[in-house]
Image (cartoon, rainbow, N blue to C red; front, side, top):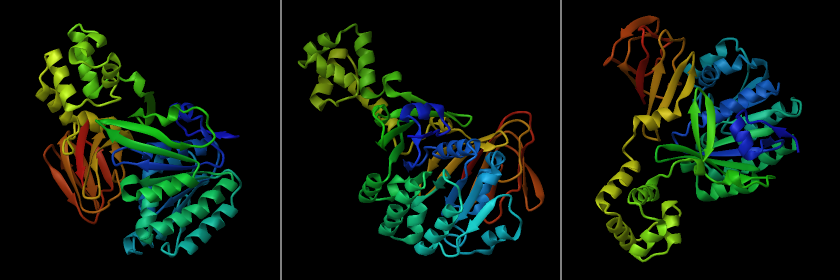
Length: 420
């Protein structure tokens, strides 16, 4: 079977690349920086001189093109944007319609009535039929489709039609969904139909990926959780077995070794088997309260301290800087951003501008009122033709207008905090 690169060498090695015809469903948690996987896939498609059809229901076409601006320089002629946002969630607002008043640097197809699934499907089919085999697809939000159609079953029916069609057309398609926005039944039905499913999630300040379904591969390694890290837009993937022991089991093991005990010696002291201690130290099982207290006494450890350390890692209201910056991604022109928190109520992002950096647009789509605070450094911002210098502690509040330029005016790195 013909193989296609994901654009990420470590990921290709883990899953044996993508296969022609694959529909790939990405079930993502907030804060997983899933867009890096999409951007890598698009970049690889351009390098392969293949068409990319990007279907957007959640973001305006201007926002999509702004985010992809640097990447489009590699293959603008191969890119087709299908706009399901403007007449959908955008409600044909004049702000979004003005996008079509000016010439576009790539092909943009606006869906007249994206709430009409038949019309949307017919438009996609027309695009597909006009292309040579091998086109690549990105549906950037199954969740956005469901929001617009207000019916999980309608979204599922669309997927059951489109997925086999794309398979027969020898394409590769990425489908993104926010896992918490969909029922278990919906996700199970999609898994039954599609070829590949990947789960992206955050646990204890680390980013994880694992395969939920992977058709046609014999190796099962991808079905185990793997940690991925992002640096300058590049993704590294490592097996859990290469990571230092963490969690309760890891700390118990460290204390046992410090006490100079073997697993058997500790097991004898608390009247359990050495196998039990081994599984506990590898976080394969959890101890009962009685066993936990006995182990702590045998090791001379304070149980309260153990639980306090463990609890801090799982506090839902605590966000450590080192965890957030591990999701650092490129926003263009050397500027980088990292997600601090992102959910249905509020989002916060850090933005880092290197010395001398200039970004001739806002660093993200304006999704509503946005508050931006200067954490460090000196920057200038241009809004509606007026430029102001901002110092640490200064802030701006955007409601309906977006900055047309950000510039680091100092000799050191600058950092902003954006909340919306």
